[in-house]
Length: 217
Image (cartoon, rainbow, N blue to C red; front, side, top):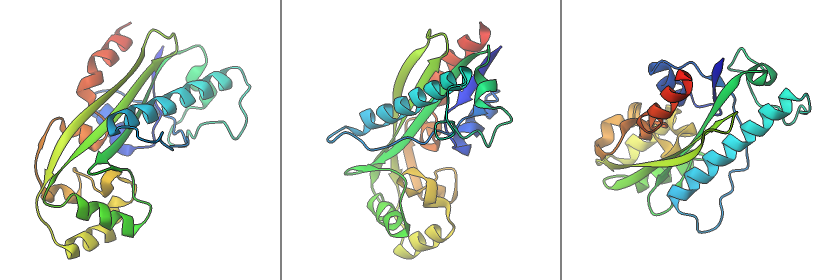
């Protein structure tokens, strides 16, 4: 039996996969997201997605051999499976991802409201880039792939008061660049050049063929 393991707690990525007919088992991985100095934003998302994917792979291997510790076990709170269930005798494909916004520097998730305000003010009435790195790792090692997709997003103008009201909704808190294109911030998007789902958090069109091939075997 082939299984898809989503090594991410993002509900947006889960929704994109489910919309396309896949029901992933959720395996949220907490890794050190410190980036090497001087890394480009494209390399940054690939670096972090690969790091998450390898951590999930190691956790599954440990669970399969009953060697994992409580500290090393992945968070499967959103799934009915356990790490051991996910790896016991089944062929699995790990999918991990990371998304950042780039505008005069890498913008990840804001740490507080002040940082969210600064991010939203920085991208106002100008263009920025959204990059998502995706890693795919199969248990039989036939699939070892990391890729990056980039979308240019052009924002319209909005007031400082609008930013404060948007932050008060809580939506920016766990979003790269402090906004959700599919949420309340969408009214401020003038246009974009590239893939919409990449901005949401997962460029499905880039992995569609690989997923179809994996589940056809």
